[in-house]
Amino acid sequence: MMLPSGDLIWVRVEAAEPAATGGQAAGPTDVALGQRTGPSVVLHLPGFAQTVRGVVTSVRQALDEHRPDSLAVEFGLEIVMRAGGLLSVLAEVGATAQIRVTASWDRRDAATQPFRHHESGSK
Amino acid sequence: MKREDIARHLLASCSARLDTDAGPRGTAFFVAPGYAITAAHVIGGTAGLPVWLSEESQTWSGHVADVLPPLASEIVGTSLYPAPDIALIKIDDGPAHACALLAGQLPEPGARVMTRGHTDTFDQQAVTAETESFRLTGTLETPVPGCTLLKLGLGEVAQGMSGAPVVELSSGDVIGMLRTTRQLGSNLGGWVVPADLIRTTWPDEIGLANDRFHQGDSRWRDAASRLRVRSPSKEGTQAGSGLSIGSVEGDVISMITGGTIGTVNIEYGPAKGRRRE
Image (tube, rainbow over all chains, first blue to last red; front, side, top):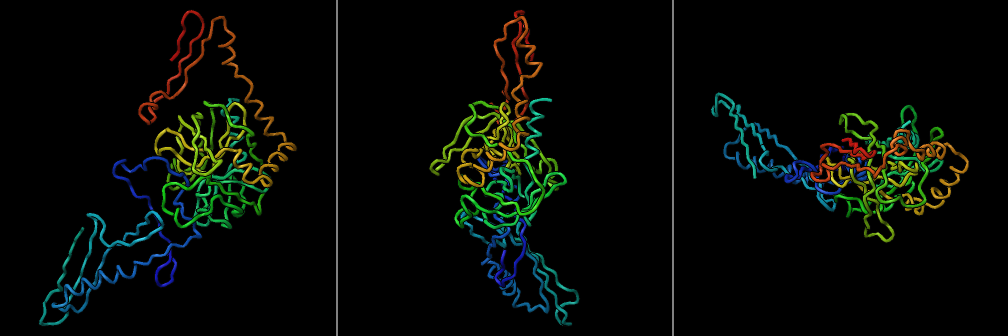
C-alpha cells in the first residue's frame, strides 16, 4: 500500500465478518489463501494524512486553553477496503474506538503532578 | 490399491502449492510440459507476476503468462472473480514433471470426483496438502458466453483449494480446475472451470501440448486404467446368489442441514433381506 508520502508499506488484511453468518462469508467465495489483491498491485491510501491531522488538531483545540507543555495522542486506525477498490481510513470504528490523550505541564504554577486524561469515545 | 488411493497419487503427481513473494496463495497443476494453470484470483489477476510452485522436495519457478480475465480496478474487493477465472503459468526453471490428463468431454451427472489442494485447514500457520471428494451435481452458466462452470456437491471446498485439479474417479481424467466454494465451512461443494474450456482458451500451449504429452507418456493412462477395474468387494456382492437392487450412498444429513454430521450407506443384498447401515 502506498502512503501519501510515497512510502510503500505492507498491510495485513483480514476479511470482514458478516454478523448474520457468525463470521462465515455467505454464499459463493473464491478460495485462494490470503486476499485476492496481488502483491504487485499497489493500493493508495489517500485519506491517511487527513485523518491523522484531523485527530491531532481536534485534541489540540480541546486542550488549547490549558496550554499543556507536552501532548501525546494515541489512537487506532482501521483500513477498510470497499467494493470497487475504494480505501478509507477510519479513526473511530464501532464501539472499539479509543483515543488516549496524555497532557503534561512542567510549569511550577500549573500543577505539582502531571495531569493525565484518558478519553474513550465511539460513534 | 483403492480407487481413492490411485486418484490421490494422480493428483499429487500433477499438483503443487503456489507461492508469490507474499507467501502461499493456493494451488496450481501442470497441464503441459513447462505449463501449469491456476485460478486468476490466486495470482491477483496480474500477468507477469513471478510465482513459485512446490511439491514435497521439488520446486519450480515461473511467471504468469496469461490471465483470463486480467485484474481490473472495478473487480477489486468484490466477492467473486469474474468468469472464467483462469491463469496460465509458464515454468522458467525446475525439474521435469507429470501432466494432468485433461478430459475431452464433460463427465456424467452424479460422477464421483476428487481434488487435492494446498490449504491451511490443519493450522493457519502452515499450508499442507488436503484431498476431498465430491459428486458432480450440475452446471452453472456465467455471464461470459461459452463459459459454463461445473457444480460440485457433497464435499467441502477449503481455503487454498483454488487452482486445484479435479479428477473423475471412474476415468482418471481431470475434469477441470476448482475455483470457488459455494459456502465456506459447509459441504455444499464448489465450482469448477471445465477442462474443455481450459483447453480451448490456450489451444497450443495446453490443448495440443496436453494431447502430445500423453501420447508419448502412458503412465497417467496406465494408472487411470486401474480405476476402471471393479473392486473385489463390490464384485463379491454383485456375483452373490442374491439379487442386488442397488445402493444408496450419500451424505444424507448434510443435504438437510448444510453441515457435515454423518454419512449413511445402505446396501441391499441377497434375498434374505440382508441390510447394512
